[in-house]
Image (cartoon, helix red, strand yellow):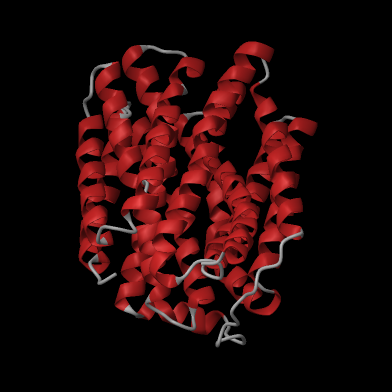
Length: 387
């Protein structure tokens, strides 16, 4: 790569990575749900439904977004997603009540759906296919930074200003920067050979066994991600008697180690067979979820949460890159289907909340996480492909 090409590559990559950071805003759903539960005195079951206001839209808009990309392009779709996300971040700070929070969470979900579907394929227009998983993982690393600092910012704002909601305008400023930077950046996009494809053609791809198994794998991955973010603080509260501000450290531990895992994965995925990394990651998650069933101390709870974060870090980029590379010419459609799998963030929390209320224990929620990890064992074989 010449110096001029390298410079052009970097200038294109920076706005995309700023957008990946904005993509991480969706991961504040767990800690936001915990604060909203406290502020409005909601049950675990009702609090578990709050993330559904975000992740429901992945079910509704993922495939239509893939079709939209075929018409207006990936970059323009990302720009729309950033605009919707900004509106979502402004609403709770303008007026804070349960109705406004539900609207804001819904808009956050819609914006993130548009972003997840369009931003990941946009990377493939900048990075060659054989390095796609590695650079997607680097994007997930940048995204994980936002996920990691969200609970920290909320706790700092609560302690320093007695207003955890300062999290929203702080993130809104970065989202605005990402919007401006990407608007000024041109990216040459490859045209989809299925430009006129519709819903039938998209959903027909689920008839292919590989695509279907990867789709369910994404559901479980995101369910584990959101579920751990939501449940780790509750386990600390239940077993150690901590208050919510202190217990939010549990979510930070998860995102810290997921960030570390993403950073390591951005290098390892370029050197080691993806299947090996995927298998190790799944076994790490499963062992940690089983450990959370009865971990009695802060050290053991933190260890299990850290193991889940480390293991879950590279699941998404491996599955996503394998899925879109398995269907040349239908990358936009496959991207839409894979991102629709983020509906796992809607499916898992209510089940976990209901299980916790039913058994009066967060161990029941951890058992639901373990079931999701167990499914990923079936996906391991599909990730062992030649690089």
